Every structure is written in structure tokens, then in C-alpha cells.
Length: 249
Image 1: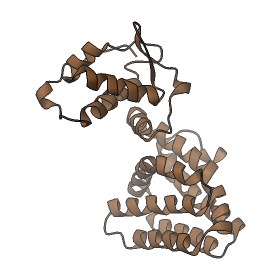
Image 2 (image 1 turned 135 degrees about the vertical axis):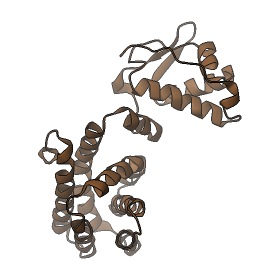
Image 3 (image 1 turned 90 degrees about the horizontal axis):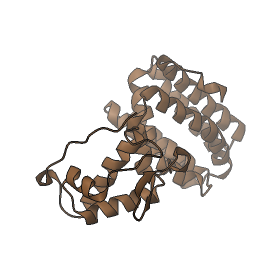
């Protein structure tokens, strides 16, 4: 995808203060993730970015530094900023993941996320059945109760996200819980889609309840099976998007 000529944004429309460099980083980051500036391409210089966004060079430098830290680009004196290869991008960074989500087609994003869930969540359920504390079980149960009493789809999605984050936390693996927080926004997108497109929404609550029941009974095998059954239900909904069966992972 070739580079496009960006129209300038009047300085009066920019918000003052520390938010400016964050907005700059997001704007430039989105252009990298959507392919406007592909890997290997040289980005506009500081003066040009300042013209486009109506921002100071200091703000531009801070934005470039932020994107450098996220692995999206590398900046060199007298050369400028060049977009790094995709394998160096930190896609687990919350900002980068959000920009990546916006740039990807819905089918590709949801299938990729479901593959990750297939790898992580059954194992997390096994660990949770073995290691969960009473407090963690109560948190999981509370999320399920909030799903049951949700007054609208948005509240249902919010409670569903908390359920799955609580599951990862209950595994008591110090690397799993932070990963859940990283993909929180991605899970919200997934559950928003499945809530709106489920052909049998009445099954959602019993499937989640089966996971809680197995974890409460401290039965790893049953917890794994219950989580895989829940993921199977999601696969059925995602099949409407087309593409390969996620269950093949």
C-alpha cells in the first residue's frame, strides 16, 4: 500500500498538554498498522509531522520515542524514522493491539483471537481448578451472576470480559493474568460480536456456569472439558464469518 498525502490538522483542533504526544503516537501508529507506512518505509520528518498535526517538535519527538519503545519504528540521527519489520512490533502492547484491531478485517482478527483462546483458556481452567482461592472463585461466580442479571448487551459483554479475566487470574500463574489484561479490549470486541450474532444465546449462561461448577469442584478434567465446550460454541458463531475452523488449532 503506497503512502498517502496527509491533510494538515489545524493546531486549534489539537488538545494542549501531555495528551498531544499520545494523540500523535496513536495517529502515526495507526498509519503504520494500517499499511499507509509499510515496514522499511521512511516516515515524514519532525517538521512535516508538526505541520500535519499542528504540534510542536517536542511533542513529535515524544511520540516518535513512544513508537520506538513499542517496536514500530527505529529513529536514527540524520536518517530519520524508519518502520521496523512486523516481527519486531510489540503486538502485545495494549495500544499496538488496539491499533492492530482497527487495521485488521473483523474475520481475521476474531479468528486470530479465538486461536489464542484455544491455546490458553482450557489450560487456564485446569490450573484454576487446582489452584483457585475462595476469593478468586467468588470473583468468578460474581461475574457469572452479573452476566445473568445484565440489563443490556453492553453490560453482558462487560461481565463476560470480567469472567474470562477472573479465570486467568484464578490460574495463579503470574504471566497469565497480565496477558488477560493486555487482551481485555480484544475480548470485548469478541464478546460484542458473539453476543450480537449467537444463534442460541440461551446456551451462553449454562456453558459459563459449567466452567464455574468444575472449578468450584476442583476437577481439572471437567474444567478443561467445560471450557472447550464453551469455545466450541464460540466457534459456531465465528463460522458465520467464514475461514478455517478454529478448533483445528
